Every structure is written in structure tokens, then in C-alpha cells.
Amino acid sequence: MPPIPSQFPEEVKSLISGIERRHNHISQVEIPELRKCTGPLAVQQSLAEEVRQDTILLSKQIEDLDLMVDDLRGEKNRKELKESVMSFRQKLDNLKAETRAALLASKKAIDQRARSNREELFASSVLSEKDKQPVNEKSRILLLPSEDALMQANADVTHALRRTIALMQTELERSVLSTQLLQDSTKTLLSASEQHDTLSSVMHASKQLVTALEKSDWLDRVLILLAFIFFLLVVAFILKQRILDRGLRIAFWWTRFIPSFSGDAELLWAMEKGPAEVVQSGSQSLSSVVVSVASSVAPVATVVLSSSISSVTSTAASEESQYLSPQYTEALEAESPLPTPSPSPSQSSTSDDEVESASPIPTPVPSIPLHDSEPLTQPHAADHDPAVHVEL
Image 1 (spheres, rainbow, N blue to C red):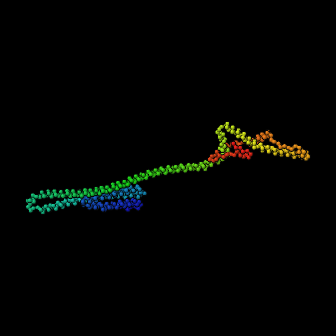
Image 2 (cartoon, rainbow, N blue to C red):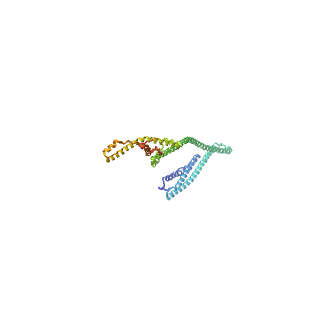
Image 3 (cartoon, rainbow, N blue to C red):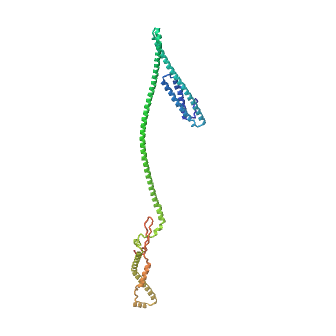
């Protein structure tokens, strides 16, 4: 056998060395023992079975080595390994031939030994019978054929008994082996049954665990989905408050200057009652406003008019005094003192009309509510007029 190339993998090297060791053991130990075996038959059969089992294992190893040929790298390595496989197969064929030859030689030796044993038995029985023969030749001649037949029958019976004993021993060994196999099979079945029960319990527990995990998984998914929806709602609310509402406030900032009608409850009630009642209530309010304004403005107008007349009179007197003498002036002042003028009805009505035209009637201003804010109301014109303050 050539040395194993160093470029082979370790697995290939170990397999080749194992094949060589098994081949050497079969060819150098087992086959010579089988060839030298001369009995009994059970020993010869056990040796032949060992050689057969080792030969089968050797052939399997050679097949595994043949399968590794295609896995090697490099054409040279594959070629060398293929040559090694071919040589091992040739050696395997030689081993099979040697095994058959050793088996035949062992069988011949066993048969020869049985034949020699039978011949020795027959020879010993013949010698003992010859010693017991009577001295009388006539009687010896008469008894010789019957004795030979008896001895032959005894020998046949003995040989048959020996064969029966050998067969019984073989069957007994087989029975013992079968009993051991049955015991091993029983133990294997018991262990398999226990493992099956264990696996059944484990599978049941695993099924329950998987079911619980599935339920918890669905519950977690629902909770996560609800939490995500709540998060989106919160984000949307924050964006609405921060961006949309603030943008609308900035975009509609001018709506703050639009007056609101929400504070005028009487006007809203009047609008609900109808236009006729609105006109009636407006006329009544207008008349009351005119009366109140006239009553409040008349004294003021009288005082203002008297003060203006007195100022005009004093001015005219001063101008005339520049042209008249002091004596004439004193005489005029002594004769006719100037009376304080009183306002005439036409002047009072005129002043009332002027006051009414000067002080317009305050009208309620509508209010427009803004987004997410309190309505802004524009102050009435009457609130800014220090002289007139009208409440409807």
C-alpha cells in the first residue's frame, strides 16, 4: 500500500487508515482462525459471521471513501484517491475469496474430524467384540454377521444421537439469543413507551403554552394599536392647537375689530319679536332720548346764550364808549339797563335740533365670535361721549 498523500483532508486520511486496519485484522486474524477451526459447528458459524460482518463494514467504508472523491480539490488528489479506492475494492474481493476458501477448509476439517471420530469409535467397538469371541470357531462363524449388524446399528444410533445433541445445542443457543433479543426489545419498547408518554405531556404543555402566547400576542397587538391611535389623536390635537388654531388666529386677526351683538340681549329679543316691534321700540327709545337730551341741554343752552349775549353787549358798549363821552354813557346806563335775554321757543327748538344732530343716537353694533376666543365688543359711541350716555 503506498503512503497516504499529505494533501488529503484529515477526514479522508482517518477513513483510509481505518480501512487499512480493518483489512489487516480480517486478513491476518479472522480468516486464519476460520481456516484452522475444526469444530464444533457453532464455533465455525460464529467465526464466519464475524468475518461476514467485518467484510460488510469494510465495504461500507470503501463506498464512503468513493463518495469523497468528488469533494476533493484538484484533479491530482481526486485521481490518487480514486486509485486508492480501486485498490481497496480489489483487496475486498480477495478477502471475500479467502473467506470462502477458509470456510470450505473449516467445513472439510470438521467433516474429517467427525469421520475420524466415528471410525475410531467403530474400531474400538470392533476390537472389544473380537476379544469377547468364543474359542469355538464354529460358533464365532455363526455369530459374526449378527454382531456386525448390531454394531453398525449401534454406531448409526450413536451418530444420530450426537447429531441430535449438536442440533439441540445449536437450537438452545439460538433460543438463548432469541430470549436475549426479546429482553432487549422489551426494554427498548418500555423506554420508547416512557419517552412517548414524556413527549406527549411535553407536547400538551407546549400546546397550552403556544395557545397562551397567541392570546397574549393578540392582546398586546390590540393594546399597541389602541396606544398608537391614542398617540395619533394626541399628536393631532397638539398640531391643531399649535398650528391650525394659531394660524387661524393670525390669519383672522382683523376679526377682533368687528363688533359683536352677543351682549345686547334686548336687541336680540326684539329681533325675535319681529320688525314691527323693533320699529315701535326704536321710536319709543328715540323719543325718550330726545326728551332726555332736550331736558339736559336746555339749561346749558340758556346759560351759554346769556353769557354770549352779555359778552356781545359788553363788547359793543366798549366800542361805543370809545366814540361817546363818558357823561352820555353814564346817562344811558342809568336810564336803560340792558335786560338778560331769555331763549325763545324757536331758539330752544333749534338748539334741541342741533343737540340731537350733534349727539347721534347710539345703535347697537353686531359682534362676530372668533375661533376659540371670547367675542370682542366695540364700545358704543355713547360711551365715548361725555355729555350723552344712553342705555337701551
